[in-house]
Amino acid sequence: MKKHLLAAAITVLAASSAFAQANDTLAKIKSSGTITLGVRESSGLSYTLGNGKYVGFHTEMAEHIISDLQKQLGLAKLETKYQPVTSQNRIPLVTNGTVDLECGSTTNNAARQKDVAFAVTTYVEEVRMAVKASSGIAAIKDLNGKTVATTTGTTSVQTLRKNERAGGLDFKEVYGKDHADSFLMVETGRADAFVMDGSILAANISKSKNPADFKIVGEVLSVEPIACMLRKDDPAFKKAVDDSIKRQIADGSLAKLYDKWFMQPVPPTNTKIGLPLSEATKNAWANPNDKPMEDYAKK
Amino acid sequence: MSWDWQVFCEDTLDRQAVPGCFGKGGDITYLDWLLSAWGWTVSVSLLALVLALVLGAVIGTLRTLEGRRVVVGLCNTWVELFRNIPLLVQIFLWYHVLPTIFPVLQGVPGFVLVVFALGFFTSARIAEQVRAGIQALPRGQRYAGLAMGFTTFQTYRYVLLPMAFRIIIPPLTSETMNIFKNSSVAFAVSVAELTMFAMQAQEETSRGIEVYLAVTALYVVSAFAINRIMAFIEKRARVPGMVAASGGGH
Image 1 (tube, chains in turn orange, purple):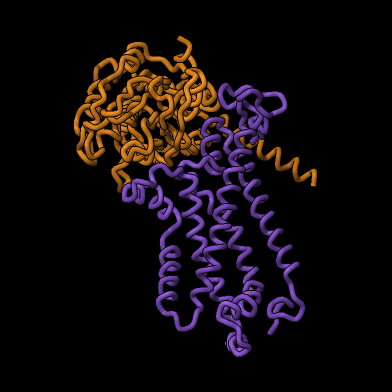
Image 2 (image 1 turned 45 degrees about the vertical axis):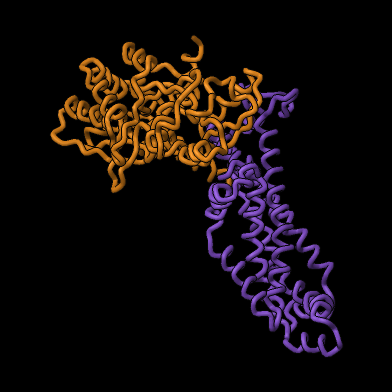
């Protein structure tokens, strides 16, 4: 029995070291002629229109990165495979090699940097709250005694908890099972505010029956740098991706993309999200970096 | 794959490990949270179970009344209504749709609505089992009771129900265990029970496997405890020589 265990352990070790040696994504892309892009089904930055079609600000940016990679590698043809991922499986899928590049809405934080690497930050998410325009709520302190909604399985729950403790506030928390559900609670009056990433709030408001009835208010509760995720310890691939993003920032094409996805009507409903480029995102573009979320909190 | 069970000792705010694993002075560790989530799961399940047993027994019995077609029809409608709509849809109807029709319900906490939704859903299933239990008895039993001069109520109380309930204890055991597992839908209407804890804690700690294993263990413990209680009741209620009590009395 022990011998078997030992043999199994050695096999696993051998396999993992072989895997470590094969950690050269550029070579893998060149030899296979394909790249697997991790995308999201329903997030503000990357979503599906159905029928295997994936769109969004980050998805289109990733497509530009891929065409830059194709040029760099001198490939006549590079096939892109779209792999939808979820918050739960995105990190395992990147580390195990299923996904080469994930451009969805992944927050770059110190805990994740232990397992994966991030490209330079391309979007800075600000956690704020959406309220009914008629509610008179303007800041987090107005929430005392109110009911606040957020979505199960997001970092906003933790943010909310910290703010409640720090501000000496007392409010009731309710949790929606997804963003649409949390927004519905504000719409039907079950909750007074919905605390979530600004882009998600803006998207939900734009899709509601009467967008003018809602507004995004209050101070920024948390700042989260969102970036494309790739495998750790692959400096050549990271440099190629970063260079492409810097090129897109420098020649203004990223700003154009932002305008297309946030300021113009977007599919599937052809409504405008209407979220102007934030100062934080502008700063990230002016000084491309891959600093984790924790560095943003310090200043 | 390395395990990290320390994660349950961490404070939920700053993620520092707390000695002794239980938070002090208002601080909450993931272990505290897990246990409170278990408490919610058990409370939802037990309250829904009581509601389901009472309603199920009454409705199941009424469905077997002879010569009362309106009552039987109403009770059949109840069963088909709650049995044919998926549980999660029922929960949403209770939480989002009914309060817009009856504004009074807006002030009712999600917890109460879930107890009703889960209780009514399960009551339909229990009613069906009670009906089956009564109808499994030979028709002569009912007539014998009536011939003795018992009223309908007495016939049910002293002749039919004592035997019917003994027959249906095994399917009832499954139903009571199901209620624990079905209580996981409560997360959808913001009850901080085990499933919600699992989804939230795994996002915050990135230790999904440990979190899900712990939650699974608590579900198993709860369902198995109910299983043992029902087995005990089955044993104590056994009457030698009675139908089904001897383990296949035919």
